[in-house]
Image 1 (cartoon, rainbow, N blue to C red):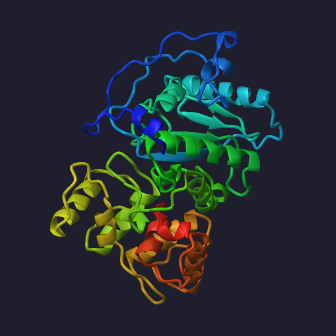
Image 2: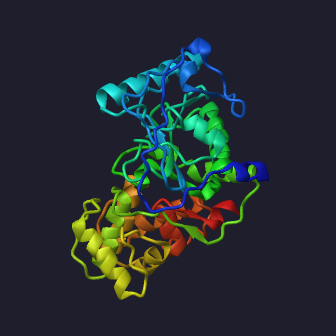
Image 3: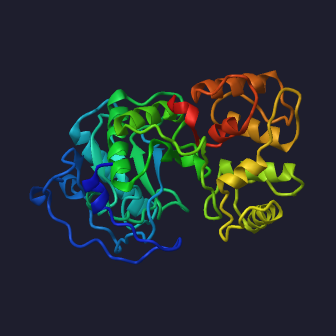
Length: 368
C-alpha cells in the first residue's frame, strides 16, 4: 500500500458496535453524475440511476477486516454490455428494497458478467476513495459492519464465471485491499459465514487462484502466519459453525450440528477456551488459537465427529463425499484434491493447514 493511501485512511478504534453516522443525502440525475477521479472504471450510483435509500445509511465505527465474495443467483446472461450492467444494478436494488425490505442495495459493489463494476450501496465508492470506514451493508448478517461485500452477476454452482468478471473482481479486490490495508488472504466466500449456496461451488473453487492473482498485483506474499482462519463469532452461522459444533462434540460436548451459533454453542466455545488457557472471548469468537486447539490430525481409519465435519464440508463444497463418520478412501481422495487446490502436500492427512483450507481459510502454501 502506498504512503499516500495509508495516510488518507481513517481508522476509528472501538468495540464491535456500529456508529449511526448518516451518509446519504439526495440523489443526482445520471446527467449530473461525476465519475470517480480515482476509480473512473467504477460506475457510481448516480451514473446508473440508483433510487435514493429509504432510510439514512451509516458508517461503521470499526475497521474493515475482510472481503466477502458472492454470486447473485441471477441468470447467466450472454449480454455483456454496459446497458445490461446498469439494468442489473437497478434490478438488484429493486429486489433488495422492495423484496427484502432493505434500505438500499445490500452489497457495496456489483460486477456484471461483462466485467463492469458498479457501486451498490450508496456511499460505498466515496468511502473507498477516502479509505474511511465502510458503509454498513446488508450482504452478510454478522459481517455487515466489518466486511466489504461484492456481488457477481450469475449463478456459479456448476459453471465458471466469464474471464471479464474474474478480471474485474481481481481489480476491485486489489483496490479495496490497498485502501483498507487488507491482504489477499482476507478474502472469503459468503458461505464461510452463512448457510447458503453462495458463492457457488464452481466459483469458490477458483478462490485460491484469485487470491494468488490479487497477491501478485499487491506484490505481497508475506503471510505473517501459516494459516488465516475465518473469524467466526456469535453473530454468524452456516457450515463453519456446524464444523465448530462437530469439533466440540468430538471433545465431549453435546451440541446440535445445526450451524446456528446459539447460546449453547456460545457457552461451549467459551468453556473450551477457558478450559484450555485460551483468552475467553466475550462474543465467543473462534480465534486462531481456538481453531488450532480443536482440530485433530486425521488419517485413514479414523472416525468420530471430526471426520463427520470433514465429510460434511467436502460434500457441501462439491468433493463428492457423504457423512459417515469414518475416514475411508473416498474421503482421503477428496482431501487430496482439496490439498492440491491449495498447494498443500496431497497426502490425504487432515493436518492444521488442511483444516484451515477446508473451513474457508487461507494457507501460506497457496502463495508458493
